[in-house]
Structure formats: C-alpha cells, structure tokens
Image (cartoon, rainbow, N blue to C red; front, side):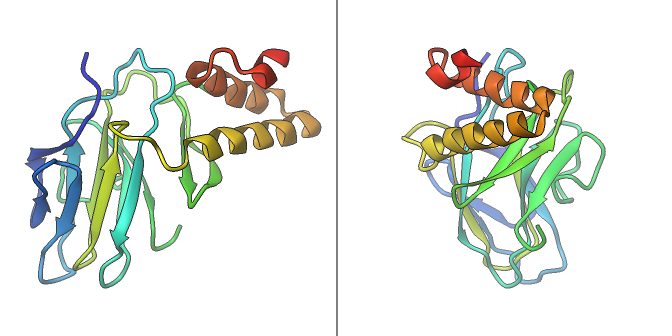
Length: 189
C-alpha cells in the first residue's frame, strides 16, 4: 500500500490552490465565512506503527484558523478537521500504537488521540483564514524536527517513568522503537 506523498488535488473543498509539486496549499477564498479542507493522496497504511509528517504554516492568514489532522474518506471537506465523526484535528488559533501526537516548533505537545484502530485515515489540513498557506513534508525530504521529536519522546518517557506512569512510558518507548529499532535508551527500558 502506498503512503501519503502529496495533497490530493481532486479531494479538496473550496478555494484551495495546490502548487505543482502537490505539497503547498493556499486558501484563496476572499471571505473567512467558508471552511475548506484537503486530504492527502493516500491513506496511512494500517501496517504503519508510527507515521510522521510535518506541516509548516507559511502564512497564518487573516485569523490564523488552520487545522491539521486526520480524517476518513467519508468526512465532508467543507468542515475543519475534527469537527465531524471520524475526523481529528489540532488548530493554530487555540490550541500507544495508533496514537497521534503533535509538535509545535520542536516542542512535543503530548498525545492528542489514542486508539484510532480500524480507521482508514488520511492526513488533512483545513482552512478558515483568508490568505492562509501551508507546506507539507511527507518524508520526501529530511524532516526539520524528527530528531527533536524523538528526543522529546525520550524526555517525556523519563518523566512518565519517574511518575510511575508505565503505560504512557511504554507508549513512547514503543513509538521510538518503531522508528529507531536499535535505540539504546528504549532497549534499556
């Protein structure tokens, strides 16, 4: 099964313009009355234990309402990620395996969603901010924050172990081993 590589130009709503390489999206609606979301070109493989992608907000637009998340194929694209069933999202204006976590400028924001088993999910991004623009990295080039994300997971894992939250620590360690099978820290625990 193919992994996401670009935004899907045929699976979007509203005034979204995608550049020629399929990685940058611009919201060109003249009003902030409408919502528009776009899905990636492929599902996240159910075999994938840790799927990581980065979305850089190039321009927050008029009001900064941009949502980054995941949704199933059946979700309406005239809504923001997370507003409907089978959709999850994180917004720039307010803030175990099969687990979703976010980072913001190299800072791990903790686990956002868990137990997403059985869902056929696409990465997605939604807009309600005139002039908003983002660019995605699905792994076609070196990630900006990959090392920091793994280090944050290690630090959080230390915190969880000290507090005795072994289930949460095991989640972080498992994610780390999925992405880096020979990691000495994870293997030690």
